[in-house]
Image (tube, rainbow, N blue to C red; front, side, top):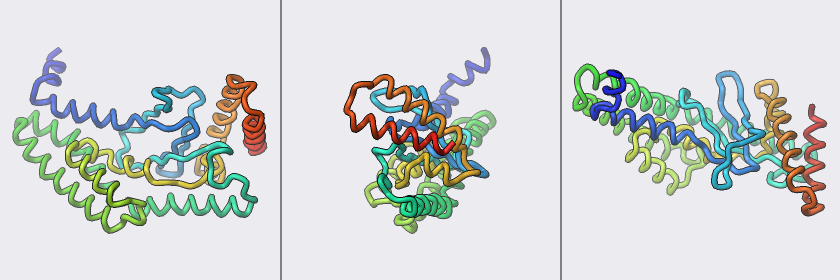
Length: 257
């Protein structure tokens, strides 16, 4: 009970609020024909829930809050929503290579941003609470605020210098920095906030297959087939062309097993 009293005390409520906003920012909304691609130390993890939690027409995924240094990308999947629909095998491979180069380009230019997100998370969720416990809230805020300002300034320089490589418009750059400056927890999730808006123009399941064995392709392929089977059972009797396209796409996925 004493620990709970400390957590709800005013001195610690600011850090609890920062933690709540940080976690809330990790609830990512994606469309029904989108999936997630998460960076991992030795590969890529694709996420496509067969039974997604849906709210307001969007599927909701909880990103990993313990990895502020990792990016998460959103990709389309399904024959009717991708850029490479109808391409021959050579052209499709070219599209997948371009998408892979885009992923590597983001990883290359986001190195400093990984450090910024990690340092921000450490300052908010380690340094701040620790200094509050040992020296009081005033000193903790005086220590954390300058760190936050320096990190925002550093991020602004990186954004401006690599804005084309990171696919950042001026409006998007200003918006992300303004949000992060006003709401410090957004700085701790800065890398993910950039990555989810970094367009990857390729079919997600096909890209997972191209990245084998450094991706969980079999898991996401099976999930896509199961999800399409469930959708087909719910919308039987709809447009014949859509049914045929969905059937062809399911057969294509099964052929990859």
